[in-house]
Length: 263
Image (cartoon, rainbow, N blue to C red; front, side):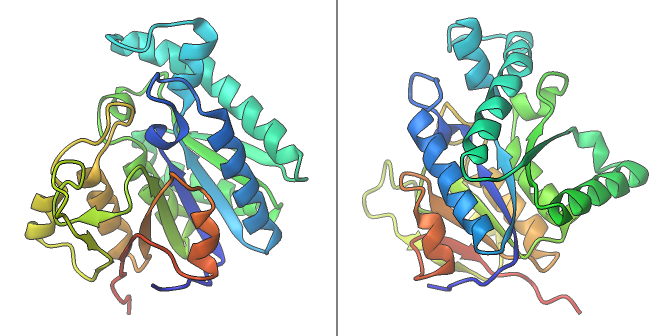
């Protein structure tokens, strides 16, 4: 496997990694993620975290049921939960001497040149100041992120805005397979992708777990966005968060999407 030496890294972690099957936050996993990112920051890397989990944190705080929830109830949970999530991140990263900053993005930011420029400038200043930007879609007012795709696409947008060297997509599966390994034990992991073809898109299928908003299809769309701009993307399994170290040290199990060469 490839070992990366990237300087500016966007790490996306989804709800399926950060929550239990009950829909509640997995605090142990959250702490492990923070420790790994803090260590990567200590090594000299600039790290941007795109994190789901606001809705789950809101469910816990407001004691909402985690099934048969209306969109407006999810949005309310996101409004409460984003505060809870950022408080946890701020406290955990402070234990390792790192500062965090919250950035909430809506889809219209990328459609507006001025807002896009403002977002890029904000990321640049925060990174120069040594902060770890923590990004989420503004789910309390945006139905798109709650209804479909969500943070896979958002992470790709952030990588483009920041001109990142690498996008790491932490999932609940090792990477892209020839078929769904949950249903087909003969499915094979595809370790290298040099081109996203219609055949690969067909393999990707539809949605992922019920706790996430996207599946492999959304990840392929994100991969296409960044690789077209010359940025590689890696999918790894978040079952063991420490695999983040392996990407930069010893190699890893996962799928790498090779970038196109930008002239």
